[in-house]
Image (cartoon, rainbow, N blue to C red; front, side, top):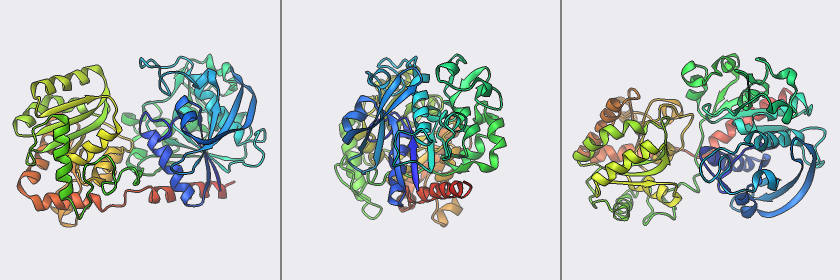
Length: 486
């Protein structure tokens, strides 16, 4: 089976969030199952620099706006997955990130940049593809950046391939002024409710959901949640129409990248049977961050975007109480300036108990995940979440809100779940500071008073199969079902 996996970011080539992790891991797992898969993505400078054996394989004519572009192909050295890259200096080779400039301002031509990505994916699946020796059976799109692909495939390119769109986060929909329709050479007759019109705007994501042959999302709970007003972000009506078709598949994690037994970022590797090594990692983390080195002080960890979605504003008003009760905090992240400043202020007030690192630091994220005693992730909504899975793998029980993938992966510790050895973390009763404080106190009660019970909770998480193997088989089943319906 041939699969074209269209996405806007792929780890380890370029990353802004969880989409990159999925786009790096899932194609690798599918390739290991015998799928002939190729990734398609924009030719950002970092991507052009990191791919091996990069060479031109085709050219495109008559593209919207830019007219011509080269298609190159190389491989990701670590996985040998093939990556096809759209090379357009005008669109993609610039300073800044995939979606915004160095100052964080969104590129004004993003509709063209990702419209072209969608268009090229559609061309490669249709009769006008410049590649004659490889055509996909399935085009797998991801989030709004490739949302126009199913529309182009059906309405313009008359592709025989089947399309699937995976929804990683409904909060980002790619909505733009209707003037972009003609720029992107989309048929105006489909700018309706039964098409890609959304409140007078062109919606990339709605186009994907409406025209794709299949819709998946990144956890079973999120598949249900997005059909409600609370989580559907205005598209719950359309999603409800497709409700029975939407398949929720929980993400896995890259176990080569996230494995405490082999993690190169740790001073000591450890496993479920050698948990003593985790204490050395904790001491090293405390020393590195200038925290008081104390094995008995509960060390709370946060690695996150600092946004309303992630719920960390709920930690701010209760953190001093936790510190006064003996806790420490190691936080890594960036986002809303008000939240950044609130945590910085708490760090200044508690220099040996609270450390805040603003920014992104891959080694430190591994060290926090391994060195902390519990991981705080009180998201208001979380399509899947990966950090709680890393916490489970590293014996750092997550403290989470009961939403999306958090609800699907973290089992609250109570008498029943502890007895049947499924308890692997602690789940809040609601999204509020009071509930977060209560949940952390519940975890602290076990951590401080019952070392054997705490070790059992750690082991329950660490011995789960968190790899992509199971998820990849579920995606493969979706592909096979689509192929049968051809």
